[in-house]
Amino acid sequence: MLELRSLTAGYDRRAPVVRNVSLRVGDGESVGLLGPSGCGKSTLARVAALLHRPDSGDVVLDGTPVLGWRHRAPRARRTAIGVVFQQPRLSADPRLRLADLIAEPLRATGRSSEVADRARELAHTVGLGEDLLGRRPHEVSDGQLQRACLARALVLRPRLLICDEMTAMLDASTTAALVAVVEEYRSATGAALLAVGHDRTLLERWCGRTAHWAELTGESGNGGGALGAAR
Image (cartoon, rainbow, N blue to C red; front, side, top):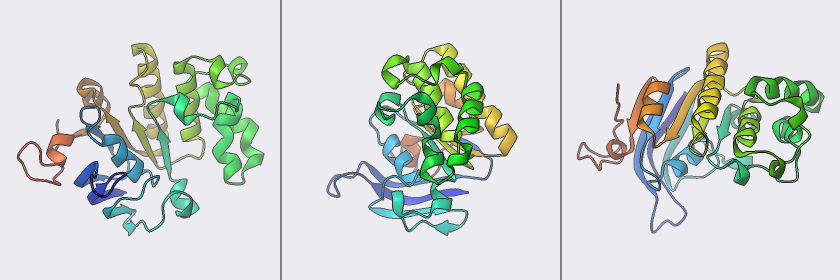
């Protein structure tokens, strides 16, 4: 489904964060991307989510190279990918109530008629009580806000879910709950998963295989751009 081919990316062409990295996530597959903080995993995840244009290399979805990024990507491609970021307070509009936060992608894609029912359905799925839906981000905990952000990522029924350090700021019980929601969604829909993180135990229990950043980038001495796998 998703192929990243020899990607180089960053925010300054003179000093790329990601160099010559390749990775593949097949239909329905769950792949973990394991690496230390600050190594470039989040930049690669943003490229995979069509949120950041790489300096070189190709992103291929369903066998077709991606040519447009962010709002220039075709709607069908943008909506096929759901993303959950590490820090919910940086990815949530502080002015929106949680119900509107969850429903934001529906309104953005002209599906306002589904807003109320879909937001309520997903709030229940991720473990948010209806009493929380009228609150704004500063009125809820990090865990509650991340639940809303996961619901937002699922609201358009994506075929690929990218979780970029989704549980890094959460306690063990909330982590287990959100991972269970993702797996229930994948079981019901056949969606693929790219889970990015630095917790080896979590990724190796959660995902079918785990790619190691050092092997992807050649830092382990096995050659650049190859897919490293554990398990």
